[in-house]
Amino acid sequence: MKPSNTARASNAARPDRVAAFFDLDKTIIAKSSTLAFSRPFFDQGLINRRSVLKSSYAQFLFLLSGADHDQMERMRAYLTSMCAGWNVEQVKTIVAETLHDIVDPLVFEEAADLIADHKLRGHDVVVVSASGEEMVGPIAELLGATHSTATRMSVADGRYTGDLDFYCYGTGKVTAIEEIAAEHGYDLTSSYAYSDSFTDMPMLEAVGHPTAVNPDRALRKVAAEKGWPILTFSNPVSLRSRLPDASTRTVAATAAVAVGAAVAGALTFGILRRGRLAP
Image (cartoon, rainbow, N blue to C red; front, side, top):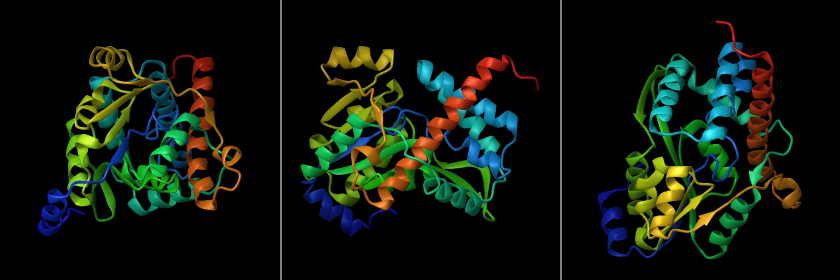
């Protein structure tokens, strides 16, 4: 919800709060959140076996080489087309059930430590992702983020139309964080941003403290030229084992990530064994 003019004016006059804006995929979690739910959607009849395998192969390429602008656009077109006609409430139910119906997930331990550090310093944590809000919102909330913003698909009569109301990607991420900053009084010049992808350069340049995490080649080059910190997150770990006293909500959130990781890994292995898929 957009802030009122009064709220905007009040916050703009006193932008004294700090936020840490985190990309989700390959920054906080080791997998693509967009593709992680392929198996649950298949189990509920939303997609067929070929779509599951195609999604898994896309996951494999994403992990292997990252995703440039053209690849992201092709993925966006494929996913929005695939989702056209899906019942929105059914999708939300599947995501909720997945969050609470799995073993421990994998989240980068280094990311969890960094999020905890920001919170101890009194900073708000905001997850900013090109994935759909139906997936990003629950994961971000249950992982302890203060806010999240993500791609919103158009809905008519309770079903996705195949179009987008808002694409949280590229300059769209800047639009999203500027709106959040205006609403909550964040000083972007004092705030932080973390991402793995060159496509997130607009978001990184919108804050005073940008950091490249597991950067692709293009982002690594720019970060080195600009003197930005470069972090390597390489230790996915069960949050249940890391935080034995974690609440049920936190465990449920991390579980969603684990299922996505397990499904993507297993299906990718299957693809590599089967070779080229028949239509």
